[in-house]
Length: 364
Image 1 (cartoon, rainbow, N blue to C red):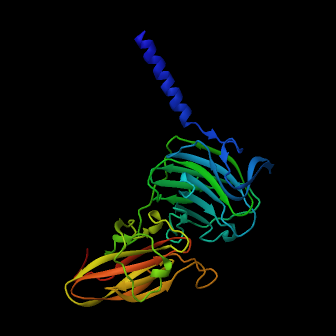
Image 2: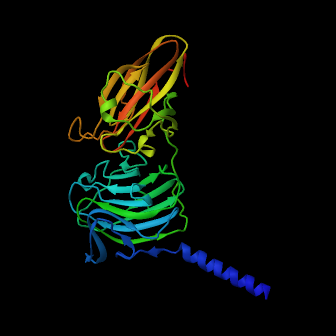
């Protein structure tokens, strides 16, 4: 009798395990989808039972996926907007996102992976290899998306199901399960949503050839969110009553401030500082990148102010960050404080910095 019970238990376990790994189709209807305040119509379009999302966000109900495969079809018009597919949705302000830019068809920024932290997208911080690439986006055509997710990596396929369009090597949210969703700003059709919890095999990654500066800043003391009016474009600032928390950067040196900063009307500014110890007085070049506004102070003296917002310099300027700017820091012997006041508009809230010469100085 014991052997019969053990055999039955094994059969039930294998059946449930196999069932959990099979692809599950998610019907495009109100039973499976939470439409919130979105404008949605369910209809047959170009041969597919679909959801027409006119504007807003839609999230799946009762789905919790960490690792596995997601597939969906998308059909968008020719327009300037950003139809998105969302995964590992924790809540409406925190998730991973893959979207297309139909108006940039064939250009390097035609597609984009970006995380959303506390309602802020990070595409100005994350661009290039591993985040987006060129593809032809045909309007009023069904395109197929497949996303294989494993740990902190993902392969994103678009139409071509053999070769990933984007190999994401660092999903920015902590590895956790979540739901799925869609967003759109003009009418877009979605169809054929399905998922599997079977762990996929990702394609091999090429080693990164990025050479990071020796003097990369890898941690900051970051303040609470402060009033824009009190801290932006001020020759002198008062930091006595601020709360400071040590925050470690990503491996690239980028710190995404939206991860732990919740902005509100009139309060989308934080301060980030670090200390550098010098053997003797000297002038050192500090290269940096930021999004979207910055004021740089060295030992309390304002040394630099700049704006790096989307379209701030010409109609195609994206405002992406890199080591594109520099300040020449007048260091005294001993400890020196470098402080960034960083304000956000949209598209990414962050900073990265590095000294180009570390001889005789030490970052504390």
